[in-house]
Image (tube, rainbow, N blue to C red; front, side, top):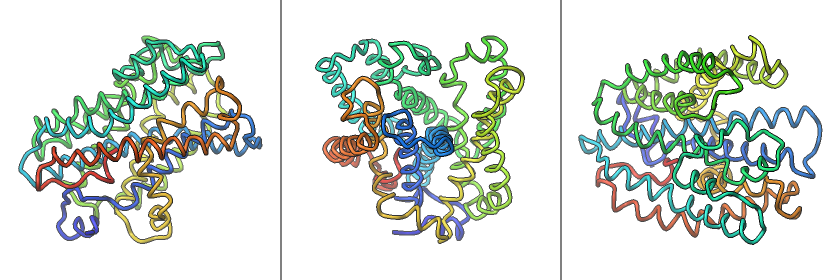
Amino acid sequence: MADPTATTATAGKSCSPDRIPGLDGLRALAALGVTIGHSTKMPGFPGPAALVEAVDIWRGLSVPLFFVLSGFLITALMVGEEHGNGSVSLPRFYARRALRILPASLVFLLGMAVVNRLAGLHVRGMDFLAAGFWFRNLYDHPWSMTGVDAYAKIRHYTAHFWSLSVEEHFYLVWPALFVWLGRGKRFGPLLALLAILPVWRVCNMYRFGVGGMNHWRTDLIADYILCGALLAVARDRWGMERIRTWVGWAGLPCLGLLLALELVGIHGPSTGPVWRVLTVTRISVECLGLVCVVAWAAAGGGSRLHRALEHPVLRWLGQISFSLYLWQQPFSGELLPAVFQTFPWNLGWSLAAATTSHYLVERPFLRMRSRFRHAAAPAETSVAQ
């Protein structure tokens, strides 16, 4: 398989390859961050405060990393199709997305509906409806998921669909904009949107207050996915070699600032001007840091860290990461029998359910996507989020 970074370095531009080395490893780290992060409140999790704090930071960055990867990979696929065929077929794109996302998601929701009935979890029908129709981030104010009331424990079982809803909203809008803007005219509008979104968050903060904002609303959290899309557009426009140079001097300062903000978020005040400034700036800083991480991984280079991301176990976990993200949720709740939610057994149950879902549900439908791919378009086997 051709090395995508070699193509970039020689040609100055890059079509989306069949597979970008290192990104499966990043997806694995993101999925593990969510899975282990949700386990910190489970019985049996080792209790040193420093360990819990480190895992909380890992978990807090995992979904944003998923978002950046999703924006980058989906845009890279469309760039590749455009280079190979001269245009992007929106009907084929949406057919591939449906085959990628819907089967595993619907099987999970059906499975949870059965568990809900048998175990008497009392998950509301509206929770399932909001998850199945991709408005879980807009329904039942996700910010209240941190509450301690009885329903907070019930809503947990579909709460993770908030992030999938954000991604689906992106899939509905961005491909059409990608086609409408045309080749060579996408970088500026994306950059303008990324400049406007922090200002929009400030307006919402003053209108609703920090506690009254729905922080999972798509328009308030779209920066991550748009940053990934911007990276793919920049990769096509300037080539990976130049981006590697930019990351070389900007990466460490961005990551240092990112870590500092995460620590302030954990130890700092939860009200007052510091909290308001942090709320507005945190997403932008996280975007810069995570884009540097994704760009570094996509650029390759053969370092020990790059080789570690290509470890067969991490690659495999990256390939099942979607199912793992879906199925870790019920095993980090508080209403199932203890055998299913005690650490580390809950990790084993999550992995078993995810493996079953990937091979019995995802794989058959992934093979069907070839019917909706142009002959010259790149394969999506490993890069589709």
